[in-house]
Image (spheres, protein in one colour):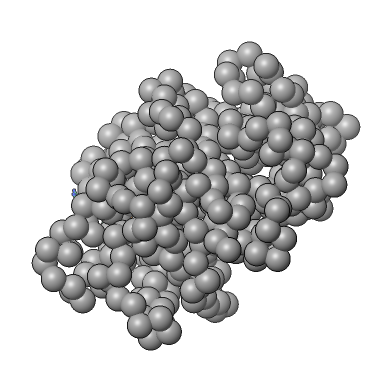
Length: 388
Ligand code: CAA
């Protein structure tokens, strides 16, 4: 029996900034951001969107009523959670009307935990072939105004339904993974922004990828020619390109060009959204599926997931015959088209308006067009509202 991703859906807030504007405001050459970092736009989350609302807004678009009745587990991966105790999954269960006999859990290991959630889901469904598991990876990447990491911020959520006989892709049982205690990126409990040793983190990412790729090759006897495309966690899209270039010399020039072309498809949406932390590799997978028109049923893809701190995993997926039917037609192009551009000063005000702590606060939700929004905090409880 094959198990894998049956449906995928995406959500990101309705505001963005242009990287040329940000470069001008920060006194940098625009090409540093556009080419050197590989980002053109960046999603900006208003105070009315957090990981719970973004996750619910992503999943709601793909779930049928039957799915909501049959889901057995909700696995919520995030590193920008809203509570130290209660999981985002249990908020989402209520917002989405998922049955009360589902398990709910939140996972954390920087940008990696979405992959762990996916593997847990695969293993559960392998043991329980009738089961459906909802995996949500949702994050707001915040480094702070005027920091080196600012150009690599972003926000959004990817939702995936894992089942037997999946529509999109099977998750193959060939993962290699590794962990090592490294201080490349972390976020202390009293900080809403990440602490990062930027260049160190980028070097560790490449080291993990190379070590896992070599281990994967040794354990499976497969090589780059086995894959139609490599999909990467993309904290900024140049990061994936650097990792890919590290292994390209292993194949012919023709295959190198094919892999580079697929890589361009896989970073198309990430360039315009920014870092999603846990969801980034899966937005990249969606981007590949939606923008590479040379993909065919049976193609194998390799996916590299990396979470600072640090943990990495590399595994393969096999595309299914009607993979496009597991995606929502025009979801990403329409979302991008409907976004509103912010000036840098508007973005700076929005950035500072984020809900922190548990003091009573009422938020103006009239400008947020999403179905699920955060309307404020009352008696130390976050107030979630369904608008339509
Ligand atoms: N035209 C074209 N390219 C230019 C340019 C120009 N005018 N000016 C500069 N560049 C290039 C530089 O040559 C450099 O390219 P290479 O990396 O290929 O050498 C690139 O632009 C970036 O320049 P700098 O290295 O000088 O940039 P920086 O010092 O401002 O920092 C950064 C870049 C370290 C990525 C920083 O943005 C950062 O700290 N980001 C957050 C950390 C991060 O994303 N780490 C990734 C690995 S960790 C991870 O993956 C987990 C996670 O999600 C956080």
